[in-house]
Image (tube, rainbow, N blue to C red):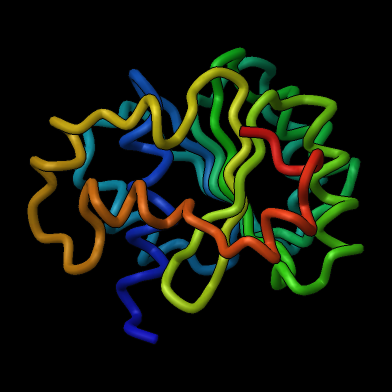
Length: 182
């Protein structure tokens, strides 16, 4: 896989969906590539915490602060609750998750996210899949085309890739029927 696909899709899908992303939280152990992609936006604040100690670091953050959260931390109910607490009421979360063929693990994650987010959709980032959860914005209906089309220096992401990333084969759609919320 090309090394630019994952960071571009992790960052640009939520940043070109949220109406006004000003504060972004990165939960990862190596944020360089994600921060490089975030530098293409006029974001007021980027906070980076370690995925290794995400729960401890999240406890120290104030409530209702972040517009977008990008997480590479192992996902569980406690992490979801803390991310929800530090997120604004129209926040987007993008997180890594097990391969979609691991139905039990993904179903558990999606059920937990269902307590906090009205939209939960997996999407392709090259050979990987990411999971987008949103409190307000739909990633394909609310894409900000002007923002996505005016991004300079990207090698993979564009408005067509943004929308097409959410297309899933029928066996995935049927497997996750009633669990994915779109």
